[in-house]
Length: 626
Image (tube, rainbow, N blue to C red; front, side, top):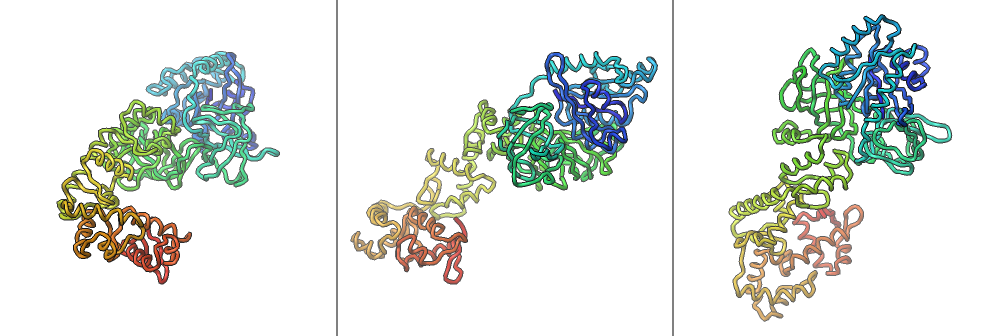
């Protein structure tokens, strides 16, 4: 169990942790000189039932609240500390606000320095605390009067911690490993060490991870969890990791970095649900500059309101954070916002989408998607996304956002009626059927606007449904072909009964010509030779073959030859194969690759120039597309 202290400066947090663990968490020289906790401190102890309990001692002084925020983002229990002589103070309230915003699951309260005051004062401050915690997550928390000096009440507080550790549920190890780095240093003989809280997943010595957002690959050389050597670390641990990498030194690592297996990219825009604190003096306006705290990260940015133009104190709403520098986030990460001067906490909430769009962020359909995201329930969120995702859901993006491994995402799909479009893209069965209807409707309109045309190539068909991902288009086309609702002739697609149709005589002549065109498909016979072999008049045969071109059954790239569509695809592919690393090729390069002769190579390349496949530059061609 990980416990974080919270409370006003000089209320005895560090002394309390020392009394419970025997460890002085003020490790810095300046902390010793000033008697003031500046940075995070850590201490560990074993409870009577045998649990290992780690304490994160956070600073209470207003100047060091950033360090406080870095320490309380991944804990099991909050230990709110209030001194009996001072009572509830400004930072007591602010720390409680932060704990509330961060969704800390449970907490207890220590009323310290009882040796300095009369019993009546203890009773009065107890009443103050009860008023403070009303309607918060600590509303039913026990208050334990203690003295770190005399030891009064410490046994009772220790017993409460033992019970809390016993009741703390083991955190699930699901998801990619994520450790929020809050300290880094070097150890002679070992190298770079980073410490932090493990937010998700598990890792072992020898595992390879990424330091983000730097994108540097590192290997785990050694581990300490709760101040003990370990082979493995998991969700909820306080952990020190000895890193192995020749790519960077300790100065390249900063508080706020992540050590993770999650492949997600850093982001400078994220959608979240924001709750403004009820004690704020004014409503939050659109584009307000703020300080953004999440895990050990601290960046500046602005708040773009997505629903109303203001959020009143105590109210909530959907917002987009536009950050001045990119950080790594996942759905469900907690964020605390402070004002531009960093003097007070405004509110906070939970990340919904780590990679929100720059355009259309406040469109109603976009807001409806955000409203259906439940960070605490990825299964329900995935079901909702599939139910509303008319063009499919990218499972890789979903899993990375929710910090779920591919196999964990697959488990969530078991209860959903889906169709797989490819390895990473799925769509609801109902939406797939609707897509088929949409494509038929689009093709009917296209045929009306293009009477007499044999059909439409796949790349132009994609243009009719610009918002569709390619796997969706290909799946719908394949299904419509299987259902005989769509026809294919060569590279042309059309609805049944549409396009150019060959009569019986034309079809019979074409069937006689096809074996001759297939025999040497990359260099079919010229028109006169073909007519002679078939015993046909060249002009009559040409008219029939032109009809076949209109029907999409043949292609005529040059005046005196007709090619099968598959042969032209092969010749097109050979353009790229004949090109050098810069995509350039000569007629000779293409001739050598295809074996069709120089003159025909020139004619075919000129055809591809007209089609935009290549562009002639002097005596060479530049490949323009694959």
